[in-house]
Length: 165
Image 1 (cartoon, rainbow, N blue to C red):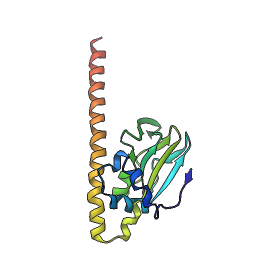
Image 2: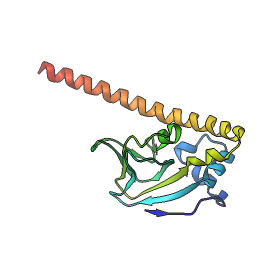
Image 3: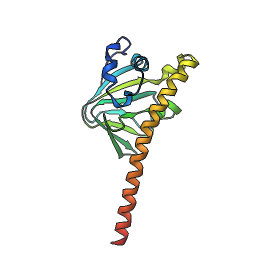
Image 4: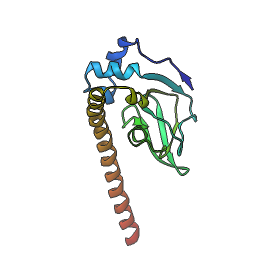
Protein backbone atom coordinates (compact mmCIF):
# COMPACT_ATOMS: atom_id res chain seq x y z
CA UNK A 1 0.00 0.00 0.00
CA UNK A 2 1.12 3.50 -0.78
CA UNK A 3 -0.24 6.25 1.44
CA UNK A 4 -0.31 10.04 1.28
CA UNK A 5 -0.03 12.28 4.33
CA UNK A 6 -3.29 13.65 5.75
CA UNK A 7 -4.90 15.98 3.22
CA UNK A 8 -5.25 18.91 5.67
CA UNK A 9 -3.94 21.56 3.30
CA UNK A 10 -5.54 20.19 0.14
CA UNK A 11 -8.59 22.40 -0.28
CA UNK A 12 -7.69 22.40 -3.99
CA UNK A 13 -9.00 18.83 -4.16
CA UNK A 14 -12.60 19.69 -3.23
CA UNK A 15 -13.78 20.05 -6.85
CA UNK A 16 -12.22 16.70 -7.76
CA UNK A 17 -14.03 14.99 -4.89
CA UNK A 18 -17.38 16.60 -5.76
CA UNK A 19 -17.26 14.44 -8.92
CA UNK A 20 -17.19 11.23 -6.85
CA UNK A 21 -20.74 9.84 -6.47
CA UNK A 22 -20.45 9.64 -2.65
CA UNK A 23 -19.72 13.39 -2.41
CA UNK A 24 -21.88 14.84 -5.21
CA UNK A 25 -24.60 16.32 -2.98
CA UNK A 26 -22.32 17.32 -0.11
CA UNK A 27 -21.45 20.88 0.91
CA UNK A 28 -17.91 22.03 0.16
CA UNK A 29 -17.11 22.67 3.86
CA UNK A 30 -17.99 19.07 4.72
CA UNK A 31 -15.67 17.80 2.00
CA UNK A 32 -12.85 20.03 3.28
CA UNK A 33 -13.36 18.67 6.81
CA UNK A 34 -13.35 15.07 5.57
CA UNK A 35 -10.23 15.69 3.49
CA UNK A 36 -8.41 17.09 6.52
CA UNK A 37 -8.98 13.73 8.27
CA UNK A 38 -8.20 11.59 5.25
CA UNK A 39 -5.36 10.06 3.30
CA UNK A 40 -5.14 8.72 -0.24
CA UNK A 41 -4.23 5.04 -0.20
CA UNK A 42 -3.27 3.04 -3.29
CA UNK A 43 -3.47 -0.77 -3.33
CA UNK A 44 -2.08 -3.28 -5.81
CA UNK A 45 -4.25 -6.09 -7.24
CA UNK A 46 -4.66 -8.85 -4.63
CA UNK A 47 -3.74 -6.59 -1.72
CA UNK A 48 -6.04 -6.72 1.32
CA UNK A 49 -7.48 -3.34 2.26
CA UNK A 50 -9.58 -4.45 5.25
CA UNK A 51 -9.46 -7.84 6.96
CA UNK A 52 -12.50 -9.67 8.33
CA UNK A 53 -12.46 -9.81 12.13
CA UNK A 54 -9.96 -6.98 12.62
CA UNK A 55 -10.72 -3.77 14.47
CA UNK A 56 -10.00 -0.45 12.83
CA UNK A 57 -11.82 2.82 12.37
CA UNK A 58 -11.12 3.70 8.74
CA UNK A 59 -13.92 4.41 6.26
CA UNK A 60 -13.03 4.04 2.56
CA UNK A 61 -14.41 5.67 -0.58
CA UNK A 62 -13.18 4.14 -3.84
CA UNK A 63 -11.76 6.81 -6.13
CA UNK A 64 -10.51 4.43 -8.80
CA UNK A 65 -10.36 0.67 -9.23
CA UNK A 66 -12.38 -2.34 -8.14
CA UNK A 67 -12.51 -4.42 -4.97
CA UNK A 68 -14.09 -7.69 -3.96
CA UNK A 69 -15.76 -8.26 -0.61
CA UNK A 70 -15.03 -11.64 0.96
CA UNK A 71 -16.78 -13.18 3.97
CA UNK A 72 -15.66 -16.53 5.40
CA UNK A 73 -13.49 -17.05 2.32
CA UNK A 74 -16.32 -16.54 -0.20
CA UNK A 75 -16.75 -13.53 -2.46
CA UNK A 76 -20.06 -11.85 -1.68
CA UNK A 77 -19.79 -8.62 -3.68
CA UNK A 78 -17.71 -6.40 -5.92
CA UNK A 79 -17.54 -2.63 -5.69
CA UNK A 80 -15.99 0.10 -7.75
CA UNK A 81 -16.04 3.87 -8.18
CA UNK A 82 -19.60 3.87 -9.54
CA UNK A 83 -21.19 0.96 -7.68
CA UNK A 84 -21.60 1.69 -3.96
CA UNK A 85 -17.89 2.32 -3.70
CA UNK A 86 -17.87 2.88 0.06
CA UNK A 87 -16.88 0.41 2.76
CA UNK A 88 -15.83 0.34 6.40
CA UNK A 89 -18.74 2.49 7.50
CA UNK A 90 -20.26 -0.16 9.77
CA UNK A 91 -17.11 -0.49 11.89
CA UNK A 92 -16.98 3.30 12.21
CA UNK A 93 -20.57 3.39 13.44
CA UNK A 94 -20.73 0.44 15.82
CA UNK A 95 -17.07 -0.07 16.74
CA UNK A 96 -17.29 -3.79 15.96
CA UNK A 97 -14.71 -5.83 14.07
CA UNK A 98 -14.75 -5.85 10.27
CA UNK A 99 -17.60 -8.03 9.01
CA UNK A 100 -15.78 -8.94 5.79
CA UNK A 101 -12.45 -8.60 4.04
CA UNK A 102 -12.00 -6.19 1.15
CA UNK A 103 -9.39 -7.05 -1.47
CA UNK A 104 -8.23 -4.98 -4.44
CA UNK A 105 -9.07 -6.61 -7.79
CA UNK A 106 -7.34 -3.93 -9.86
CA UNK A 107 -5.00 -1.16 -8.82
CA UNK A 108 -7.33 0.63 -6.41
CA UNK A 109 -7.15 4.16 -5.06
CA UNK A 110 -9.23 5.02 -1.98
CA UNK A 111 -9.92 8.03 0.15
CA UNK A 112 -9.36 6.62 3.65
CA UNK A 113 -10.92 8.61 6.50
CA UNK A 114 -10.07 7.96 10.14
CA UNK A 115 -13.38 8.02 12.04
CA UNK A 116 -11.65 8.24 15.45
CA UNK A 117 -11.55 12.01 14.96
CA UNK A 118 -15.14 12.07 16.22
CA UNK A 119 -13.90 11.59 19.78
CA UNK A 120 -12.16 14.98 19.61
CA UNK A 121 -14.88 17.22 18.19
CA UNK A 122 -17.62 19.22 19.86
CA UNK A 123 -21.09 17.67 20.17
CA UNK A 124 -22.37 20.17 17.58
CA UNK A 125 -19.64 19.20 15.09
CA UNK A 126 -20.32 15.52 15.74
CA UNK A 127 -24.05 16.01 15.16
CA UNK A 128 -23.43 17.96 11.95
CA UNK A 129 -21.00 15.34 10.69
CA UNK A 130 -23.33 12.45 11.46
CA UNK A 131 -26.35 14.16 9.88
CA UNK A 132 -24.47 14.29 6.57
CA UNK A 133 -22.67 10.98 7.05
CA UNK A 134 -25.87 9.08 7.87
CA UNK A 135 -27.65 10.56 4.86
CA UNK A 136 -24.79 9.43 2.62
CA UNK A 137 -24.72 6.07 4.36
CA UNK A 138 -28.48 5.68 3.89
CA UNK A 139 -28.02 6.21 0.15
CA UNK A 140 -25.24 3.60 0.02
CA UNK A 141 -27.23 1.08 2.07
CA UNK A 142 -30.39 1.68 0.02
CA UNK A 143 -28.44 0.94 -3.15
CA UNK A 144 -26.99 -2.23 -1.63
CA UNK A 145 -30.39 -3.34 -0.36
CA UNK A 146 -31.92 -2.77 -3.79
CA UNK A 147 -29.18 -4.90 -5.37
CA UNK A 148 -29.66 -7.60 -2.74
CA UNK A 149 -33.42 -7.62 -3.35
CA UNK A 150 -32.88 -7.99 -7.08
CA UNK A 151 -30.41 -10.85 -6.51
CA UNK A 152 -32.83 -12.57 -4.11
CA UNK A 153 -35.64 -12.39 -6.67
CA UNK A 154 -33.33 -13.72 -9.37
CA UNK A 155 -32.25 -16.63 -7.14
CA UNK A 156 -35.84 -17.45 -6.17
CA UNK A 157 -36.83 -17.50 -9.84
CA UNK A 158 -33.86 -19.74 -10.63
CA UNK A 159 -34.73 -22.09 -7.75
CA UNK A 160 -38.33 -22.30 -8.94
CA UNK A 161 -37.15 -23.02 -12.48
CA UNK A 162 -34.86 -25.80 -11.22
CA UNK A 163 -37.65 -27.35 -9.15
CA UNK A 164 -39.87 -27.53 -12.24
CA UNK A 165 -37.16 -29.06 -14.44
